[in-house]
Image (cartoon, rainbow, N blue to C red):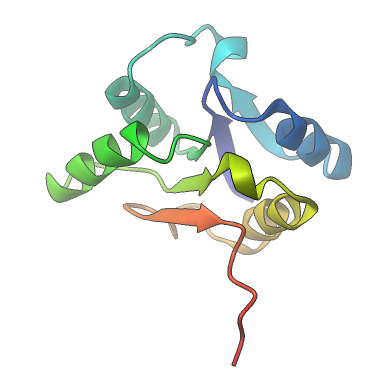
Length: 121
């Protein structure tokens, strides 16, 4: 099962619902582990060192830092970006599905936006 870290601006409603629906889900919040206020580059470094997928609502700055890390071929755990306009039960279900059905290293060096597309043809 994937392990997650939510940055300090990640929507708490999503975290609460994830924990309610799957209590054994391994998700930590930066502020809860004493890392609130650290810069984006350090967040990405910490997440990679800990083997945690980053959950964020930051569609601008954190993704820029992540793209730089990926271009420099630095270890970068996966990043799931949830636009504040896209917060829904679908997003929560997608995170739970990814957590349950993915391998730990499957998302290395990737940035994905949630919810996942529902356009199957």
